[in-house]
Length: 91
Image (cartoon, rainbow, N blue to C red; front, side, top):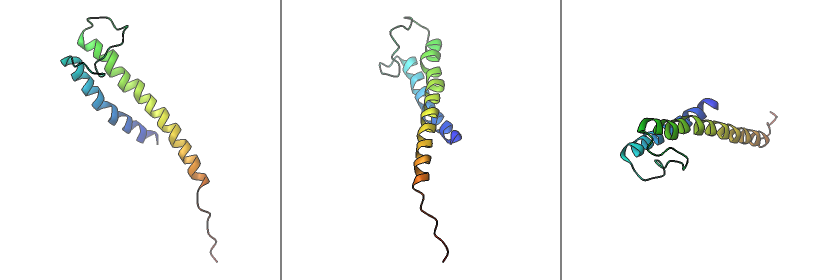
């Protein structure tokens, strides 16, 4: 399950990173390019993208996806084990 969650996490986050790079570079006014209030004003593009786009998306959110996906998958596996049909005897 870990490999599937990891593949899903990166498949979901890499397009977001690309959109965030374009948003930072082009100056789009969206939630993808919004900087937190404590970010230094006039920060250069590359450090801004690294600290506010790349690192959070590929480390923080991938980790969150792995933990939450494994937790939910474990709960579903546990519940599924309770609802297994009983084995029939060969008579």
